Image (cartoon, rainbow, N blue to C red; front, side, top):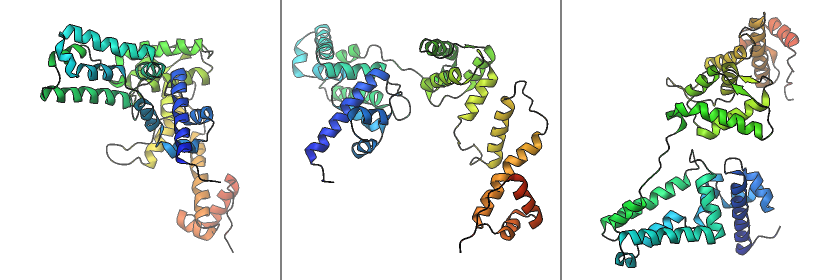
Length: 333
């Protein structure tokens, strides 16, 4: 395969950015995958990783192609000619210039809409919030150097909006949850209601994924469960099934903790919270089979060695292999 020229590589990069811009505007950033972008651009997913580290890097590169309205306003206000007009007139002129660019430059308008309405500033997708904060910090530096009018800065920075993470505003969760259920129903998913116990459980969750995690959870429960009423049991099961393996305060996650999580999910899955008789033997079987299978794999099918490692009599091991239907791993010759 011939090596691509620098111009061809740059053309591919722009095609990826154009596709990302269009899809982010249509679907939102969180609901657009890198595979979607690659397909829309007519390239492979590997092409994205050739030009960008990840979605966040791609997102930030899209922003770098334009100057957002707030930055335009601050830059214009910092010009020496701005000192010749009154603060009110200066404020009017700079904001009108920014609005003019948003309306008459389609690309600036699209990126501005994405940055303000189509992305949540959580985890790695904080590029817009950081970029805005950097612009404000730059202006403060100009003020200290006497190059920017302080009165105009405070007029431009009248109402900064700082939205705390979802875990710090649990009182919003019931309204958000019901809104997401209604939205899911409008999009064709089964209509659901949610009881107070489920709402209380949602309010106690830390929500590392912020509002988007809550929306995804509500949509998942609409799609996967036949019940018309979402209860605390359903919420518990979904939160436990999708909980990441994180470190505990006392150290790394242990086997005991993982087993406890699995058992809690199993109990929550029962209609009345009580499993059917014979639970002990069923759980032991679930543990024994992979344990014996992995040990035999490690010993390349040597049952004598596997029995020694497991601390079992060889005949006992042979019977368990037969009873549990463990696949034998033969040693290499």
